[in-house]
Length: 366
Ligand SMILES: Cc1cc2nc3c(=O)[nH]c(=O)nc-3n(C[C@H](O)[C@H](O)[C@H](O)COP(=O)(O)O)c2cc1C
Image 1 (cartoon, rainbow, N blue to C red):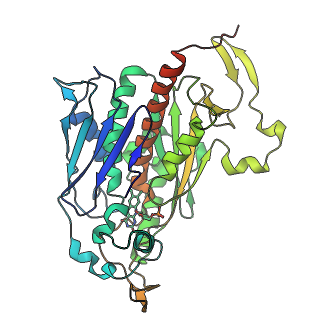
Image 2 (image 1 turned 120 degrees about the horizontal axis):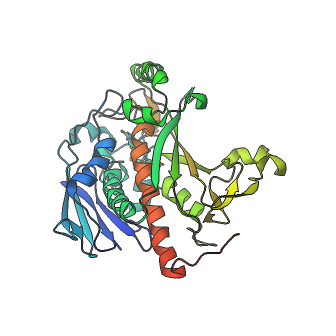
Image 3 (image 1 turned 90 degrees about the horizontal axis):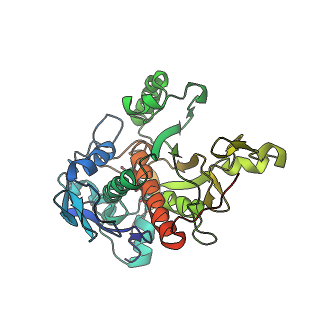
């Protein structure tokens, strides 16, 4: 299988399968001299870790990261940073049924059709276990960003879970860390919990929408025309398992607006242009404008459910398939830290590309 590498100047290659001995990421293009240790990366992994609430898979992985190279005396050396996470809680016998059958909505069928064989245990390489490696790589990106762009803030949160929507009038970023849904509204968390309990008891799963807010990004990041910042952010989010749609700013809703509604009018502020709205989501012509960057994506419902679904076996036999094993009832929850990691990798990649091409040249206003 090829194409396991993401990024240009800052790039990482992930390796490993769900039920192999370990997985990890090789991160290249890391500037030298950046303070980095395992504890810093661990903080990000702990937010993605399974089994931290009744609303995520009960697979109990410690997700302890080890840095095998690229760091000396607490600072990056500029050489590849090799990250490894051991798999410690596999139950491969849970997956015996899918060795010869295909879960509707999962990647079993297409992996078989393309490669002719697959590691079916836990979904092998198609498992979102791979996202642990991305979150570790994202931790390296966050360390570099903290060094080079200390004003940058990347915040992911859920805005929808099935029939429930975030009430934006109650948006409170301080609430995100205080509930299992990364929900910026503490008062709604109980209702979300009851709703997901009902879904799980019904042997079902549910989709979600996540928003990532990038604040403090300077103007000028993004390389038109084939490495637009929005192109790369969309590709980054779409590369996450189960993501089916990505929007920037107004996104699909822009189709219903007029030019007068959608224009982000400009006035002169104290230190440069000041926008009166942000329909564009912080990106114009593929280049960051200095406004908040707003990315939203949808995640489909978990395909592995214990309600029988029609499918087929490898030998062509038609069956009703129940998928056992330990699965997330709403994969959107743990997608939040994964999306933040991918956003960090894209912003850093573009920061380094911009430094390489323009060396910081900027137009002057006023
Ligand atoms: C954080 C996260 C956790 C996931 N956990 C599960 C899971 O427990 N069971 C499952 O069937 N799919 C899970 N998925 C989704 C599958 O990995 C994904 O649907 C599958 O690889 C097929 O790819 P596709 O949905 O992108 O087409 C998860 C996705 C994410 C982002």
